[in-house]
Structures are given as structure tokens and as C-alpha cells.
Length: 107
Image (cartoon, rainbow, N blue to C red):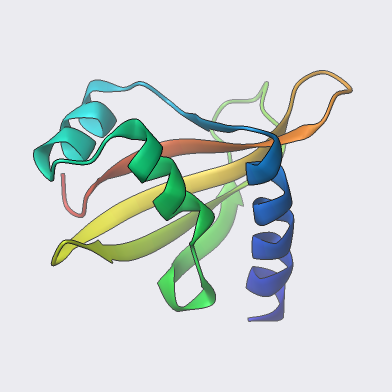
């Protein structure tokens, strides 16, 4: 769990700079289905913990992207959600938090 703790420490720092949720229909529908706003979803992302950790890091399938993908399973309003995140960087700029998946588990 030390690796997860290290990732989450960097994740929280990246969240302070920016949180970007990829606007895929699956993500938008999943967030809306339980009545969350994007801002509320971002707050949930800031609060990810070791208890929510499921798997990773795994290699990003996009060869242009650096960094590993981390998967979390978080219960939100009584429903398990699949959350896939990474720490990204714009050019040589600051790190930011990128969420590739945020939808009910099993979608």
C-alpha cells in the first residue's frame, strides 16, 4: 500500500492545480445518473483513499501519454463506481489530475 499512498499524495497535489474529467458520454451519464454535478464529482476525486484502491498502475494504452493508470472502486450513494485516474502534465508545466473513467461499476 506504500505505492498507493505515494500516488495519492501526488494525486492530491495535482488536484490542487487542476482536475480534468474526460467528457466521455459514459462518464457524463454516470455522473448525471446519480445527480452529481461536475464539481461534486471533482470533490469525490480529491477524496480518493487507499480503501478505494482497486488496481494499478497499469500502462496507458495511448502511446502519447506518459504515466500509469490507477483504478479505484468507490461507493457513491450506495453504488459502486469505477474510477480510472492518472497524474498528467501539460508540456513542461504543472502536474494535474486527469480522470479517464467515472461511471457505475460494470458499465
